[in-house]
Length: 266
Image 1 (tube, rainbow, N blue to C red):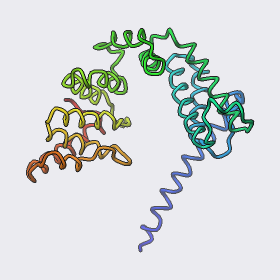
Image 2: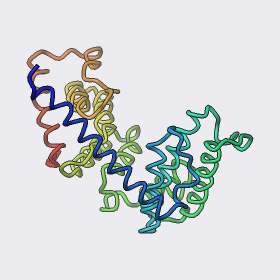
Image 3: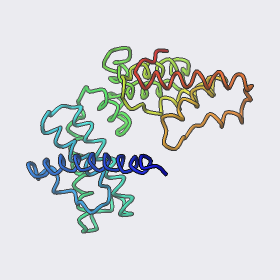
Image 4: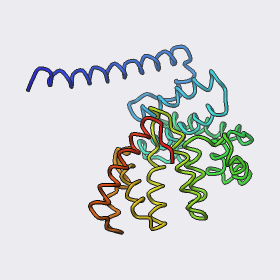
């Protein structure tokens, strides 16, 4: 093994440690300057990432006070509660019977989530409309969200994914067009939500467009840590010729590159 080969992993490790240290410094600064944002969430090694996300979201909400920041905090509180329930093996609703610091953190997170949920019931932010429809079965929120279809208010990939899901059963062709539009909204360097890709693959499968189902399954493999939808599974339903597979593989690689540099257009 060459000296260069030995140095490379150490460089990568050093860079990773530097990033982690920088993140810890920012978090330490937030908690030092605004201890009320941190002190109700115990730092015992469990749910550390979720705890960090909550603290940062609380900080941004304190700084900006927007409905979008409220939504981001609500999402992070929800994730923290799910992690905490798993780590303590206690459901949140039963947690009041316990008295450990971790359970106290669960209770604090749950109470803040309930407060934010109540405070945002009349918000017109599309993410919060979606939240109140899906979490509270609020029909008015659903109608208000749907009324934004075709406007720039929904021109974000996550919102297009939600909109596509609404039409998936009633109008799959429209759902496909919506998801393609969602993918075109990504800018260079942004993280692509693989659910747009797997949803496209599944919709094409339902339309019996097996080549396109294979294509988008192939694309999705580049954006999933552990692929939920693999192009390989489509061989069960339809056999593509080697020439066809090669052609779709080339096209998939092109689409992956376009998504990464923000130039994908349907």
